[in-house]
Length: 269
Image (cartoon, rainbow, N blue to C red; front, side, top):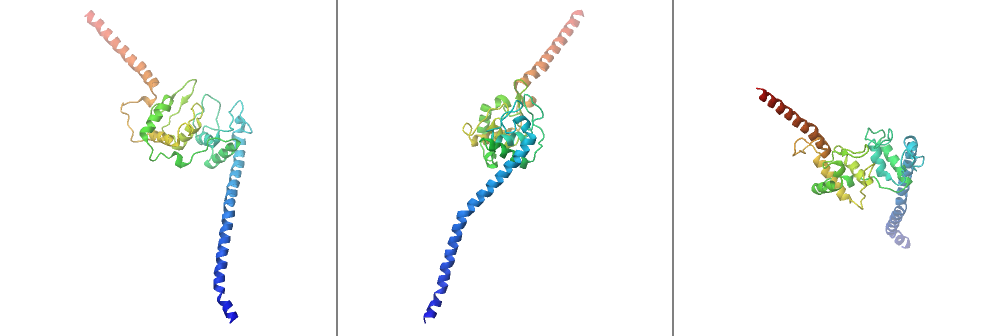
């Protein structure tokens, strides 16, 4: 009878053992899985930095110094952050072909993976603005009207009120923003490349940056129209004044000559 009673307790004991095993397994996973994931992320980041350092030594060190400290040919990169690297390299401005008043946009020579590696290495030299995610610069649902107000107050002085660019001093210029991607516009506002002032989130929050991007996409989109007719490249009063001076004054001179010629003929007759 004792043996039979002992056998009847076995199923309950098996259930208890199974629950205990599951609890222990769950506790071990919670304890070790996050650490393993963090270690994997850290390893991937270290590899990206190492590869970026190699790319930097070949394409950047001759101007910016072997450790990013800068030189007479290029500024220091310590603290510029990954956002500045992504903007400059993915728009082809860097590596620069030659020094000048302003480095122009040109074809990109690195893949996006290589750009990310370069950005990781430069970011490791000192904390700086981080490259934005798609969620940060996606203008879906943004306030276009508010973006127009912000752009005219902060950007139109250089880029013209529709973002078509304009001339600055000493050979510098504000580039045309018509075909610039939302990511690069966001990064430019965040980092202030070349002659442009920076607008960090403490000065211009993320939502306002998205409003500006939405405004630029609207005024430069396929459906946009110019209510004033011929806009002369949209470059503002400089091009308009030049047009008026050359063609307007030229037309007035031509009319004056025509009137004088016909008046002289009338007197002779």
